[in-house]
Every structure is written in structure tokens, then in C-alpha cells.
Length: 252
Image (cartoon, rainbow, N blue to C red; front, side):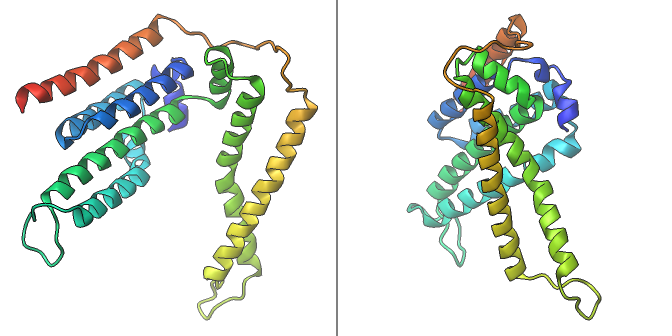
């Protein structure tokens, strides 16, 4: 998914512009309290990300699963806990106000999640770091620290698989011949992953300091460009947002 997205039209855009648009959209949806325009924005954004980032549906839709689970939890909690008029007869009291507010909050989470997937899939860590220093004026020591943190997060699934495989080798076998791993082994694996992350952070911090990432000015190798196409991206995103909201206001 990332290789296809990073070679796409969206992948060629400036990371700082994409980050600024994600923050702007995330703030703007906070002022929408009805599910209808939020649903329109999410569906429009889903199609837009598919076309601009070139991510196949079979990869884009599963990437939404964590956000769908979170949004579903938000919807259920609000539907069951908010006071108001009961929506329908059921063993549990579900209110109309809870459904409306919960659906709006859930759709906000889906929109922000979709933008996050588009940003991370279409942006290389190096381009993000260089653009942050070049255009967002973030100090190099913080930008390199963010890059190191992202690389560490990307390596965690592989480290977790290695820890679990090592546990399976040492675990006693059950009657079916499979390793017996329960909650205790899972907790030990989680603790081992935490220890490895702390040690990796210490090594990364030492490496960054040894390379002289201080406060003095630094040059950039292969700067990330920003041009008319990035302005077009900003205009398109803003226009679609306004068009969806205005259309909903006219049709309500």
C-alpha cells in the first residue's frame, strides 16, 4: 500500500502541506454536529484518497478497521448514555440524541483516521523530516527525533513477532503438539517489547547526540520542493469541504 501511495500524485505533494490540511480538516469537523455532512465528507474523502493516492480498495478499506472499531465504540457509548427521547423499544434505553451525537463523533473519528492513513501511506519518513525542517521550521533535533520515533514504531511489529516466536520455541507443548502460550506469556512478551523500546530509545538518543544535532544551523540534502501542485491540493480540499457543507445546508 505504501509503495503505491508514495509513487502517486498525492505522494508527490509536500508533507508539510498535507499535514497542515489534515490539521485544518480535523479542526473544521469539530464545528459540524450533524451526521449527514460528516458522512458526505467521509465518503468524498474516501473516493478522493483512492484516486489521489492510488491505494487499492482491498488495502484502503482494511486500513480503516481500527478507526471503525473506535467509532463504533463512541457511537454505542453515546447512544446508551446520553439522556433524551427514546429511539425505539428495546431492553436497553437508546436515545435519539445519543444516536445523533454518537454518529457525528464517530464520523469525525473516521474522517480524521482517513486523513491520517492518507498522510502516512503517501509520505516517506525522510520527506516528512526534511519538509518539517525546511517549511515548518521545526528544529533539526526534534525533526530527527520524530524520524527516529517513526522508524522505531515501524519496527515494533517485527520485534513483537520475534519475541513471540522465541516464546513459542521455549513454551511447553500441549496434547495437540502446539506451544502452550496464554495470558502470562502475552504479558511477558509485552514487557519484553517495552524493555526493547526503552533500550532502543537510549541508543537512538546517544546516536543523535554523537552526530552533533545541536542548535547550530544545518544544511539540507535534497530539499523537498513546494509548488503550484501543492496549492492546488489545498484549494481542492477546501473547495470540496465547503461544497459538501453548503450542499447539506441547502438541502436540509
